[in-house]
Image (tube, rainbow, N blue to C red; front, side, top):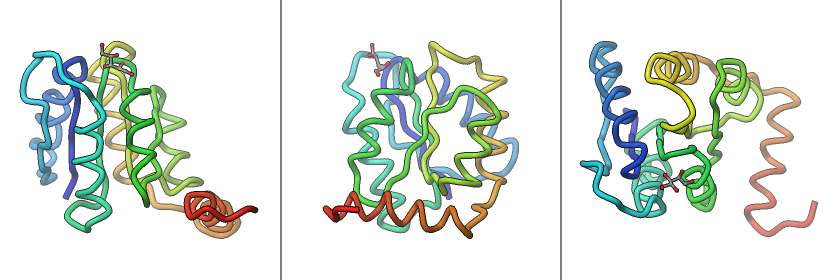
Length: 148
Ligand code: RB5
């Protein structure tokens, strides 16, 4: 299960990604926004990310204008590792090396075709573990207030 959300600027890209997920028979929960009417992205990030951290979704996909604001908000949710990506390599390696559980993209940055390719590689790539697990553990230790 994938949680998907956007603000107004990301809404058209979210709708394209939803079509792609439907074609691929990948189940998703649409956490809004539901139109291009102006809204604030933080709450949409939070709703989708809580679906992940509470176990209702495996990963989340978030869209805003740049992908940046919504990724910043996502990364404030405990347990979330959100990556803002606009290229295939980054979307692949943030799974391999960072075990990212949220992919963020900017509707004013990339088109629907490219975004769906990023979604595809993000959802199909497994975390490599090994030395990268230690680094991810350190990221999560910072989140828990530990001094490294
Ligand atoms: C909305 O205009 C825009 O600021 C927002 O979608 C996003 O790009 C923020 O990072």
